[in-house]
Image (cartoon, rainbow, N blue to C red):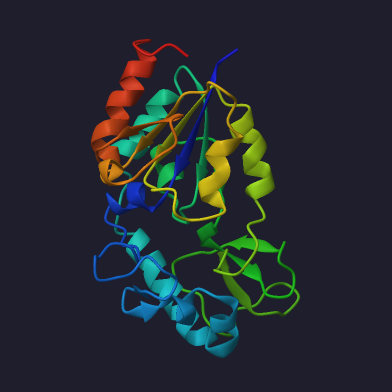
Amino acid sequence: MKKQITILSGAGISSESGIRTFRDSDSLPRSIGGLWEQHRIEDVATPEAWYRNPKLVLEFYNLRRKQLLEVEPNAGHIAITDLQKKFDVQVITQNVDDLHERAGNKKVLHLHGELKKVRSTAYPYQVYDLEGWELSLGDTCENGYQLRPHIVWFGEEVPNLPVAAPIVSESDAVIIVGTSLNVYPAASLYQFAKTNCPIWIIDPKADELVYPESITPINEQAGAALPRLVQSLLKKEIIL
């Protein structure tokens, strides 16, 4: 039986493909009150924003989808696909893009929704693949209700969190990449790992942060460090 390695991925791995996030600039605070590409998060990524100005919210996510069509998976995503050759690889991602899937990552659980999907405002479990990149006012589900982005907004529950925790608890190793463990509740997932389960975190600012002793920090970008770590695991230079 293949040993299981779980990847916990965040915005950093996508940003290396050119996807901007509200944490990209030093001038944009990490708080929810920061600007996200010239928009306040409260105005585009909360339930209140949707009720107040759904047209603005739709335009915002339309631009995100359009941008997604212009980027490609990077070396970090591809390294995860390589890891699948000898391990059972589970990807749990905070990202809403499809770069993991496009790189060939087979088992991907999205915690915060998926940018290329939409859902009914009245029936949350009616989820649809969106053709193209535009969703407009007047686009409805089969029951006639407006469609909204299939995104977990700030202030909403994370429905896949109870699914993710058991995956981590069954892991033989955990690799955290593209996140500094600042976004909760996703940031707490590594705590479900078994005692003595090796955990690595790949973060270019790892030397600026303090992590628990159970985590081995790698102070590099995902595209450089993840392929190297994967090769060490594949060649059994690191034994699980």
